[in-house]
Image 1 (cartoon, helix red, strand yellow):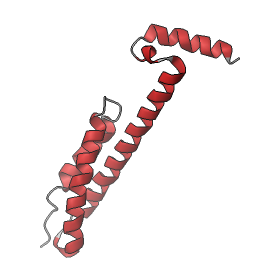
Image 2: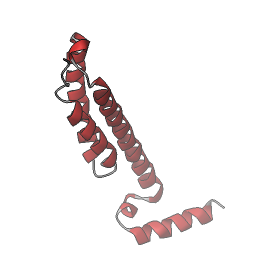
Image 3: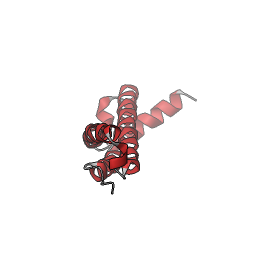
Image 4: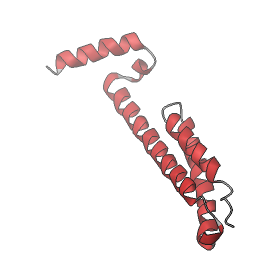
Length: 110
């Protein structure tokens, strides 16, 4: 009777958390990287003896979610850098200043 891969559920949970945390100060990247490391270990186990394990789809889903979470984190980081370079770094913490600069930018680009 096939058994479950040891880290498949953890990889799935970490993959989900990497998507949820992708925009929260780098937490998502941490979950995503841990999920990918665990997924790599379990993938090696599975490839060594595929008939011994039954939940490879769970592992693969978690791995894909971790990759999506990492990509979303990188995109949000790029967006923040572009946003900061266009409007200034001080607007990232001051919403009123952000609104003023966005209005100024919109008027200049009309």
